[in-house]
Picture 1: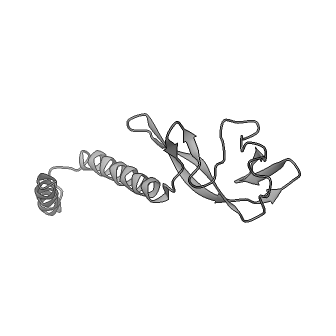
Picture 2 (picture 1 turned 90 degrees about the horizontal axis):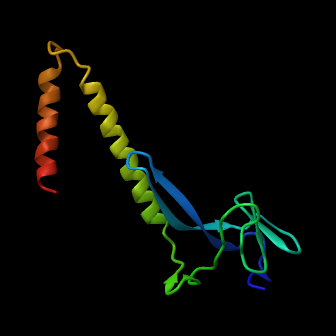
Length: 131
């Protein structure tokens, strides 16, 4: 039994999916989660029930692992929290930029702040040229 001695507040790793709706891509990350409850045959993490025998989620697709467990051939479970947070930040930034561009398209040409907006856009263009 893989999780025979698991207790409340132990940490297991489960996959969390981040979707980028702009490109229709999904990214899975191994994220540490605390065990909330334990029964004779199951444990609860994030409201989902997992079997103690093998860590398989009941009722949905998913598996809980311990840090360092092999999950696919030679792939081992590692903490990918920072990678996930970085991707979420990039997606949020991209969405903000898209919203800004949409709003910019609605600016009247005689808007009094248009020269300031143009100056900011020149700075952004200069920055992007360095990447």
